[in-house]
Length: 85
Image (cartoon, rainbow, N blue to C red; front, side):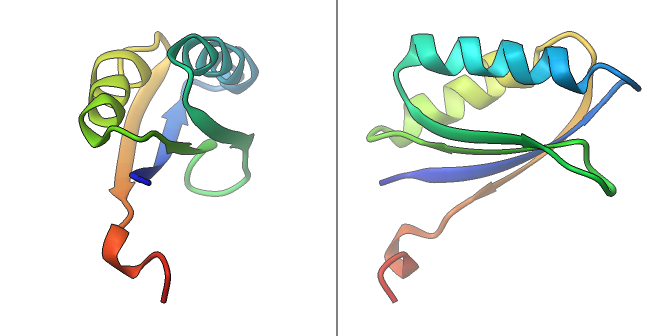
């Protein structure tokens, strides 16, 4: 199953509202996900999976990255061929 990890940087103090918005978007899109606020270089870590890789890319590019107060993202797509090693 196509999976991506997305690391997000947000404006100071906006991580909770961004996580809430991410959950709303991804629930509507009917994809599997986990999202957590974290300490460190990034503020939020998102794991998102879908049966359709193109849908996954579209959600990340057109919805997640365009959330207000998201400063930057780093997306890492899982190499599907290595998932069962």
